[in-house]
Length: 240
Image (cartoon, rainbow, N blue to C red):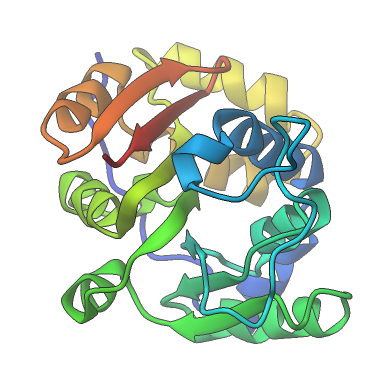
């Protein structure tokens, strides 16, 4: 098994953030939100239901405080996809990169969801200290960027209100260098050499399934961990 190799810091400049935003992750983002929605039930979130169906109420007031947290939002593509697929909830989208958040603001302003997404430059640690809680806490492809994945996942779990759901997805570290190259060729074969190298580094910086499972067993909420593609794991947690 390959040992984990953390990525060098990237995408801190406006140029790097813009280049990242121009990469096409639309299918991956749509699948992330669709899988999140599939993991939710009205009972989990204690949301009102129609008297005759088990479906969610079509809309909830968007003037309420944020009910959804997206951590490591980048340029806000996941919150925008969430609002496209789900017609309730207000999203607090957080990231540490000013360059990413500047483009995120542009993307939100250009959408019809300006009243449903709020941006904030922060990490999970201040939110936990503030006692913030959310019905849905989601994070896509952030874990492989941080050195202490256990601390991040613990703080994400602490931000879920009782009855709420944690949904985290990230890359899965292959067992060999050859397996990394196979994934790069399969999923980034048409990309630029720079983009291929970023993907290669991200795979090397990711956790193994056993590492994710070990962390999940220590979280203060009930969790399940699955391998959902040839390069991704997903953690779903429910706070009781």
